[in-house]
Length: 482
Ligand code: NAI
Image 1 (cartoon, helix red, strand yellow):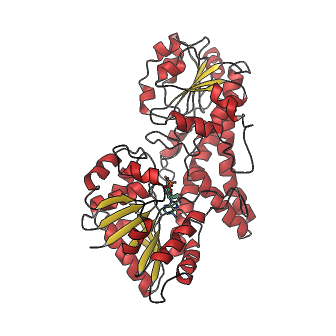
Image 2: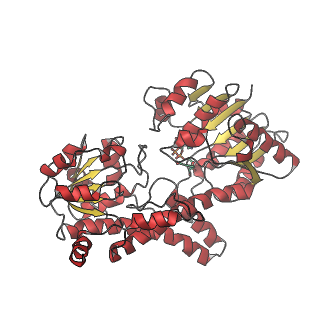
């Protein structure tokens, strides 16, 4: 029986290994992590992450061919194939701080693999890493090995799942990318990994490349996706300035088959643990290779994203008569997108900090994010790059200014304004007449996800701001013209 060990039981390692176990009943899959709390949650009825469909997959395999353990060394020792899905955050200090990927976790995993291995291993990069990391990993493994007879093959198999749709993405991937050495041993390792995916992925979607192309493709993939969001968000600012309507512009763009409709929704900005981190990583690699213009090009994608968040805060404050001081503002949604409990780099953090910096009182509701997580995110100085967009409020005052509540009605009661910051489906079915009745007047809605029916809200009596859509002042002008 082939034995697989997945190192790192996070948003990638957990779901990916669970789907491999589901689709390959003849393979034994052990998922290991140094975090005891994460592993005990994977072994409980309350999994450590929320992802639609994940619980069902785990329940089908756990205790059969899927296990979660903190005994990292034992399972690495026993495995033939090791997937490494540890975190690779942005470095916060030292050379490349604020941009380069921090490979500390990867390096310690590689050293541990070299320490405990007594047989040949295929080591797979699942984490997103800088291009040419495999070279460094190979050095660590071969220079620390127990015996010259042990051979390591390193493959790059980047993960393309999106949080919120991870299980669907894993069950039905657009493509699986496998990069490896182009010598006979490398090609044999690629064949072995292909055979695992072939249990459920059609062969024409499994693409073999060289190592560097696979590593770089993952960074390029996230950079291109983020770039589309920043492009449409930049257009949304121009729409507001001219009376054009961003959803009509994006429909027109999306119908062009050369462009396509996906990732063209204007919003308060992108978030999540990957886009910013991976673009910064790309920027750093470009700079290290003397490619200043290329680095600057990608930097702008992040700058536009920061601008979009600041613009949103600015709009809230200026609409509410230039001050939100002492006013209650309801925040609906805190996760970086719907169907996930993940708040890493969520735009809600910057928007809330901006409003807190202007002395607003926030009443926050998110269907899946805990109060502890929200308070933690808002108390931390989370600035990692060299351009803080808002002054950070002091953490003790934050706790007093922030109230986390259990539903949208409680959040909006007596509020002057409400901001939609995550596109949770349930916000579409809120009774906005009831919300309006219980808010201070004039009552403002700031729809940071363009998900609500603006006309209906205006009929109820709200003053509405929706990203890239005509403002009330434009509508009045249009009526005069008509
Ligand atoms: P995560 O932070 O949720 O999980 C990483 C896990 O690795 C943690 O539980 C940590 O305790 C564990 N870990 C760290 N060092 C370890 C070690 N030496 N031994 C055992 N366990 C160790 O991170 P996430 O989101 O799963 O991301 C992992 C990688 O996958 C990152 O490189 C990320 O860029 C990449 N990725 C993330 C995606 C996402 O949507 N979150 C999508 C595609 C790739």
